[in-house]
Image 1: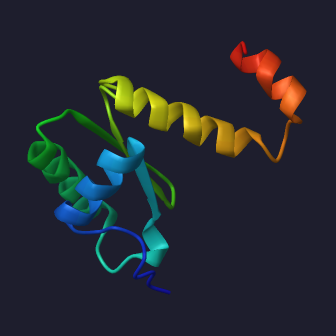
Image 2: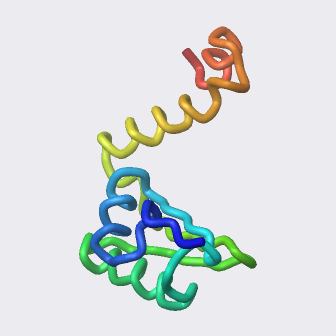
Length: 101
């Protein structure tokens, strides 16, 4: 099954990296090989002029900006993503203790 929502081109991977600092794909759900996806992720890094690490573990492909977060805006995005990921697991009081508020 091919997933048209998963970024596979260098430009679409660059967009996802710039927004989230990382992107992942399932090799079985994309129309290109895992090696080609990883090459496109490295090309995306060159487009962004930032270092990208890629890895494939079984069916999972991951690309991440090695220097994320590189500025205050990215740090804020990173914190918001962490909060969003943790919210279903922790109540607000516990989350505030964890992040130091």
